[in-house]
Length: 338
Image (tube, rainbow, N blue to C red; front, top):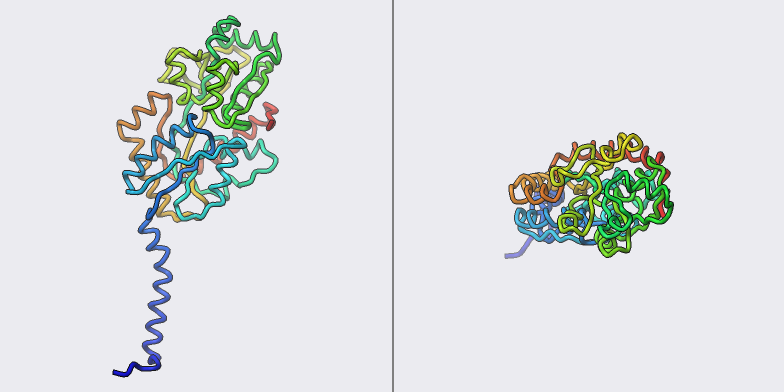
């Protein structure tokens, strides 16, 4: 049989229509098959800190739910800005996510003159994973040597000995740094700030006696506090933490000078702007399920975290509110990037 050398006009139009529909269906089909390969969760801090702990708590649950590996990728530097920039510039195909923090998406825009990303325009919020208080803590041996038993003792010594105490943080501009700066501004005390590339390395130096005080996220410090290596002076939330019920708040322990002090942290998943809503919603739903499961929830609560799993819209509202709040804190404290 001889094949025709030309296609009738009606058939040509039909083929054109089918081709156009295929092009339109392409992205939808790709979204429907997502994830077809491993997904990366960028943690913008070193291993061992709360951002890392929370990412590693949800990653295995997402791997089980979606049948693909969700891999935690630590990219520390510049108060979380290095990792956040990586995700902001990644393809918006659902294969690169960020475990963002109050630092990367609440503080840094007010603190850094130039950010390599826009925390609002360059990202789409997925869900708040957890909120946590910070804990004001000291090296046990240093606290004993200086006869510091509580916040009042600490303020008295710091004011009488300006510059003799150093304050470790997970990096300039993080909530851990800003919690300390707010404390300094309200009490009129001075401590030398030492920024690290994450909470984990800072904790190692604090436990080892190379740093004196830290306002760390509670989950990453809980083991060292329970083990007696760190002395918890106070939590930075407005109420006591159920995980450390005998430890007062900074406001409780600090007297009139610290009335109204509050500096909690939060952590949540975000994706590059333009990531399909279908993917965003699927991730949010599975994270919410994981955080509601008894095994995950009990583990996080025991470490001092308050699991969430809220909607993308509610997480977006939180981020907007935090920009306003922390801009005021940065201005009032006079905090600067080292």
